[in-house]
Image (tube, rainbow, N blue to C red; front, side, top):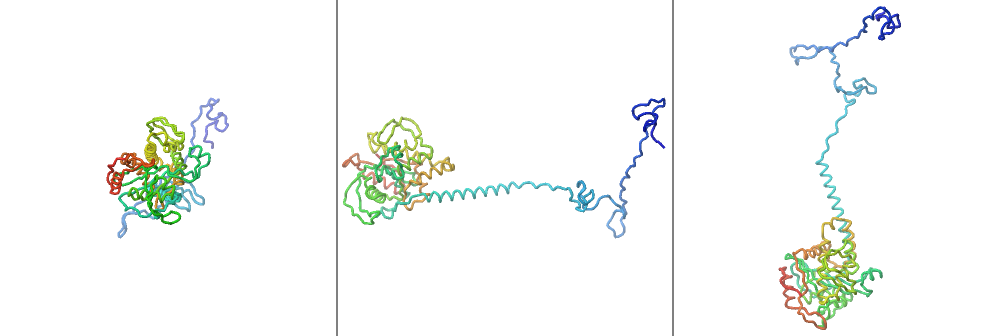
Length: 425
């Protein structure tokens, strides 16, 4: 029996859906029978029975869900049915990623940073400490004054040309003299009343006391002879210079620091130059100085010429010591800054240039050296005082004579860590 109208299967009625050429109208379309899926049966509730646990499902009822199966668990798994197969209800289920523990991450990051900073700091300390040349033995200095309050540094600039090439000597106008002499000497007192920087002119008239030779160990008795202060250094080095300063001032020197020409210029270049305000233009052929008035940044070569210039000033050595004080305070102020300390590209070259050429006493630590630089910085920061040692205005054989009464008063104030009221020359 054909349930379709004519024309469905190539009959006389023509093609289905395209109209009919015959006189008989197209009959109604017969739809195929679709079998409807029976609705799931609701479980039949069984009234509670005596001693039972309440309502339950009738025996033999299949709800269509197996225990442990996760709804929406995904497609068919290998070896199993469409609802998870033998793997059970976890098939296709993705557990959500736990939220990151930011508190723990921050703690770990902070701890790592602290460890790295400590490791770098400790490494830098030992690297820098190993570069210090601890060559001066203050234990060889005899008959020393009593210790006072605060710390006293004897800072010496020598004309040592050690490590300099002929080209360096020509460029820096240092000459080619052998050995080394003191070109500048200063006492820096660091105490609770603020730092005080006292320049000692190298032409100062001083008495050479009894002393023990730094190399021979032989004791030389005092004869009362007087010389220029820088002659003490030339005669027996740093130990005799310290002994002579202590004898003529009554002030105990705690630490000794010396730097030569080459190292001085290298430090300045390592920090990118030192800005200085020069009040008056001057020239000096011997030092190579040629400066205009006003603010300017000096490189290593210019800086060395500035602190060595002597013959361009009418006041000779006194004017030079004032320039040296001004420059060293500016150098310390611009070196002991966060931009230098926390910047390894400036810190390491500066430390390398300075520590390679510094000569210090055997008891000098990096901590003491750092305190010295910060005290020097304080001189220009308004917390300290800079001065020349008091002079009488007279001279002996061309040597400058100290005002002993004022020097004694100055030393008492420094030893007691009082505010300095004595005026220098």
